[in-house]
Amino acid sequence: MIVGYSGLVIIARTGGTRLDEPACVDDLFVAVTDNVRAGGWRIGFLGPVDDTSPDDLANNLALETAAPAIALSVFDSDCALATAANPSGGAVEFYLNEEIVRALVDDDRFEPLNSQAAAGLLAWAEKASLVASPDRLATALEGSPGPFGDGILEFTRALGIAELRD
Amino acid sequence: MNALLRRFVELIEADLAAAGFVRRGPVFRYFDLEGNGIALDIQRTTALRGEVEFFINVGVLLAPHLRYYFGQDDPRRDAMPHHSVWHHRLVATDDTAELPDHTFSLSTDTDVARAATIVRTWLAEYIPRMKSWLGDFDAMLAAIDGDRERSSRARAERLASGQWKAGRWPDGTWNAGIIRAYAHAERGDVDAVTAETASWHDSGPDSLAADALAIANQRLTERKG
Image (cartoon, rainbow over all chains, first blue to last red; front, side, top):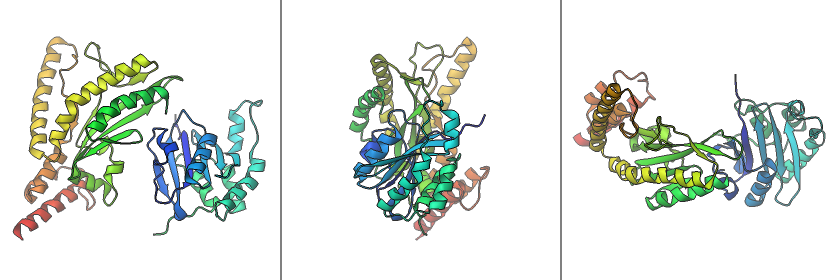
């Protein structure tokens, strides 16, 4: 049996501050694998966390960093439930790989999100001073997070978060 | 953080902070001025809902060995027990257990107190011991010899009685080859490093063996200069 990555992933603009330093992350008592991106953005893999939700964490991160932030709860590398939050309030909930979420969740509990999410994420990116690619974003939302988080990294690139240049 | 885990961490953090350890997430670290250190990691594992289960891993860190791993990065922020030359997973059971178990499990306040007592007792004995090894190759090599003798006695006792008995075996696993290689290197003994690392699987230009040899050559040059 192959078991994929399950756990939280966060995307935040913290500049030179590592993603294990914000109080809302420190309080989770996790070791964070930190990936530095251009413009002060960072992508952090937190592993399994049982006492927060992507919604709470994204909102707390946005408030603490005073910048837009995203938190994703990844299930077995196949799909993710996620929230993109703004420090001024307002959040966009979305999935990575909504098809798989639909298959995993009971029909009466499943709430389709992605038909509205793309526009919300483009607005989120604009508030974050990012230049997102609508086509690439639509494709990334349909993809899975992947066993090594490749789908999440592609999602961040679609939002306009660039790799660091040498 | 889960409330039970938070109480447990608060209890052991009091002792660790007093001993100079700094916590970052689930890892406590202590370093001396030369960059030798100790890392203690609370490694959570899957548990039933309402329970918290974890292992506690400890490692003694050797400064040149860390420099090999981390290069320009700061090991004070990222060093883990698996970067060590001596590592140990604490036993969560006491001396009355028939077999040792390494899983700490918290589902009540009583569990928290019991686990914290086990860990604090171990720390009280081992923090001074681990600190005495930092940067002292002779102390580490003597401890390796002592642990080897103790293992031999425990093995003989187990064979004779047919039973595992708590407290008979030394705690921890040494990586004696790495310690010897860096001890030779710091003395500038190029031939001894070469001999020590001759059987190592990886001897390429980026290998640990090459790093130890480079240090040995550097120390030798410094002495000649």
